[in-house]
Every structure is written in structure tokens, then in C-alpha cells.
Image (cartoon, rainbow, N blue to C red; front, side, top):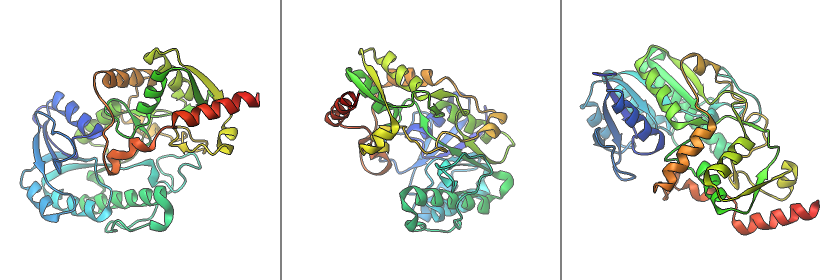
Length: 346
């Protein structure tokens, strides 16, 4: 992409930083916009610091344009995204917005495709919209409003919406794969949620970033589910790869999911990535695949994440999104109690 100019909203964490690295390696001239307080700016980019809640900062950012494309990795509140998109519309070409599968009203309870119903949220909604929907519902509704804000500001032909499911890989800060690797490295018997053959479809952060960059440089528009294909991997492949790469002699003990629920084990958090809802790993991403999304084997993602961790990488800690790693994983004593109860059950 030599000679093309890219603006990344975010650019210091996980997906945003991976986008910056890939873009620089591909010859893009890269500008990033963030507060400049959460992590160091990526070497080689033009870093512009500002607050997404301040309209005057968006106006100041626009003065650094024009750009061929912008990729927004941080938008969460519709009226803030609307302010950003309105300010940037005159100085950007394509507008790529990173949304979420949470925008679908049926997630995680039913299988989904790109045209499944989404939440109805206006493009100028504030952060209080959807408070009665619970955390996941409100998050999905607000992301849907952000999508509407982008289309409202730049039009459908310039808007690209990416709806990832679970993104894993080096620099993950949510604490999902990093917890499984840390736990496997501790050794002993590992509480594993059956069935072992449960399909999962996380996408590698580098594959998601490469797809976003390809769309930023291309002519496609519309929305795309960004997940690995249905059936791409299984939970046993996840656990077994973590056990193999950490090489601590860990022994998975596969337990009954209904029994785990009866014991009060929290899905999605105490055992990260485990969820029994029928739609959570049934997201059709064939439209993205047809547009160029390629997904590497899950084992490669796990091995390379472990390499990053053992080289000194770790989940970011702190408040807000960066503090979510503390919410994931089951305490060691609680795991031992459950394993003992499972064996006694016979």
C-alpha cells in the first residue's frame, strides 16, 4: 500500500497496534489518534493525542489529513462516533468501523449470519442508551448505534463495518487465551468444560487486522462478520494446544457442562471462552471469507501467544477495558474443590 495514508483511531493496544504494525510493514503512512496515556505509541507512526469525548479534538485531528482510509477500533458511544465521523468525513476516503457480533439481537442464543436482525439505536445516542438491556445488550445496542453513526456521516458506499466475535493472539488484554495458557503452565489436573468436541471459532488478531487493511484499501462496503469458519476448531484443540505448548505435564479433566452450571461456574469468565448458548460459536462469516478473510490454525495463535507471553508480554492491567483480565479465570482453590467433587461423583 505504498503511498497510501491510513488513520487509526486507537493504535496502541491489541488490534489497533497490530493494525499499525501491519500497515507500516505494507507501506502505508500511518497516523494514530488516542489519548496517549494507556500505552506507548507505535514507532514509525504520526501520533496525534486527543480525547474522543472532545469535539474540538476531532476538529484538530482533521487538520492532519487527508487520509485514504480510517479504521476506528475504539468507538463505543454513538454520539461520539458521529462527531468523529462528521469531522473526518471531508478528509478520509473509506471509513472502517470495528463493531461486534453483540449488535445482533439473537447473539448468543441463535445462529447468526451477516443479515441477522440488529439492535435499533439512533446514531446520536449517548452512553445511557439501552441501560435496561443489561451489560451485553447495552453494549450491543450502542455498537449498533455507532454503525449507524458512521453510515449517517459518510454514506453506505464509503462505510465498512466489521463485526468480530472473539479475537485472540499476542497482546490480548481481555485475559481469555492468556488465562488458559497461564493455567496450563501451572500443571496438575485442569478443569475442562465438556464436551471436548464443542466447536469454537475465534479469529487471530493478525488475521482480523489484515482483513481490515484489505477492506480499507479496496472497494467492498457493508458489514462483515469477522470470525473463523464454523467448525474451524474445537474446545479440546484449544486446551490441548495450551497444554502442549506450556509443557508442564498438565492433565485436562473433561467435565459435564450441566454439572458445571449446577455448581455455579460462571460461563465466559470463570472458564474463559466456555459458553453453552447455541449461537455463541455459530456465526456465519462466509461473506468475509469471500472478501478475503483468511484464518490461520488455532494452534498457531496459541503457540505465538505463548511465545509473546514468555518473552515478557502480559495482559494490560488497569481500569475499564484494560482491566478485564482480572475478571477471567477460576481461582485455584475453587478449581481444586470442583475437581474433587467431580471425581467423587464418579
